[in-house]
Length: 399
Image 1: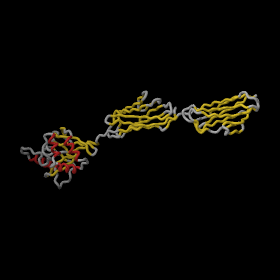
Image 2 (image 1 turned 90 degrees about the vertical axis):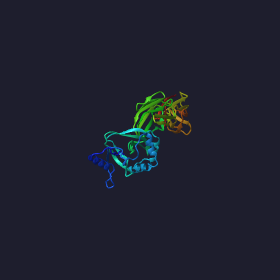
Image 3 (image 1 turned 90 degrees about the horizontal axis):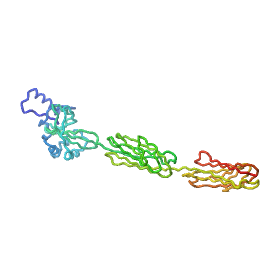
Image 4 (image 1 turned 30 degrees about the horizontal axis):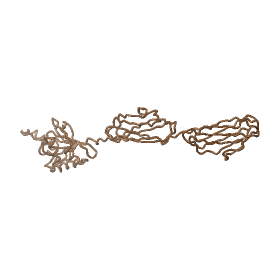
């Protein structure tokens, strides 16, 4: 610690009294209550110096390496209640850079090693109250997840250790998310989530989202820069435990599975990557075609109605139902498929459970002319994807 040294010249009675008071404060007797604070004004008292004077950094390394001194060092740390590992302190004293250090006047040190009757004593909250800063040696090291600085005044080797806070840890995670499925023609949103898992701010994080061919980016949040085949973001500062979400809106133009492989780089952190995928669902598009043959048709003769429904889209349509409503000038006779239900003038064909993309279904109906006139036969198609029925009309002349 900071200990008192008597001057070689004779001291006046008042100075002797002041010295006794300072020694009492720094080294209270056993009957005194544990002091909460101490003051020191002069260094080098042989009675309180923890170890010999330091002249070089090598001297400091020698103090911590001295097997005779180590038990006293451990005793001081135990008295202080230090939470670090002494092995880290000794290793750092032997290998880490040692620098010159000054303890300014008025600084309060958390504790300092001293001696009382030769025994190691840990004094707490010691204020340097001398006229000039104390010249010391210092080195830093990590232990138990925290940074520490060991400072040792040169005149007396009374060391102390101060807490500099948690060991700086840089860390980031990158996650990619997208809907499992999206229909073609709808906007697709891909979001990247950057989370700072470290205990220091992450700065200048560069995030990149390549865009697969055929899915142009339409918009990006947080100032994302959209290029032909990628979206880039730069996060200037992300606080510890902070999260930043970055999203891009894309417009898929063809069906299929699409994978997004994102990446992020930041100084002090290994490169990050994350992937997610979605299924672009195509859209069905039904085409209704119809015909009659022959036209015109004589009363008592038959004409053949043909209806063809083609799925021109890129995805199946389901529950495709075809209905023919025959005008009164004609009478339904037979159908193909034969399972069609004929009720009066309405013919309902069996429902097609699934009509694949680019596939077609064809139904026919034989109708007989029963009354001369201009007959208007209606064709109606419903399906799961149709918001309203497809309808068409075929005009047949009956004579």
